[in-house]
Image 1: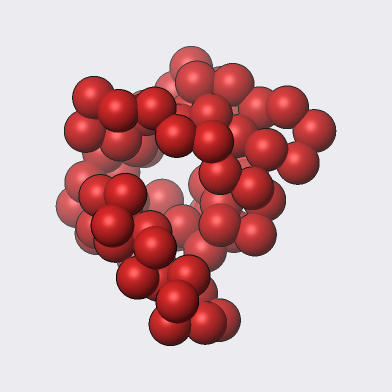
Image 2: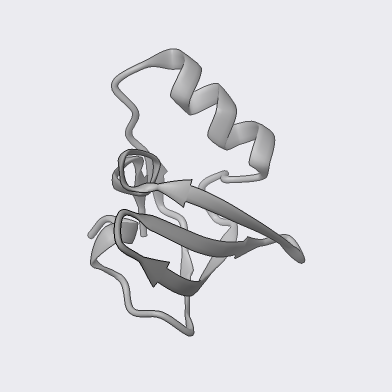
Length: 70
């Protein structure tokens, strides 16, 4: 499933990054989104998500969240 289907306050393990554009994939890698890494959904607001990756919080939009397979 993709991260957009996840529940808030739940931790998941990233299994794959499926991005349509290389720039999107590179951006997610720069945030620390790698297969095998844990990601926690802190909250979900409209089309944005607050996620925790490696003890850092980020706001990502739905397009980025759809690229993260957990």
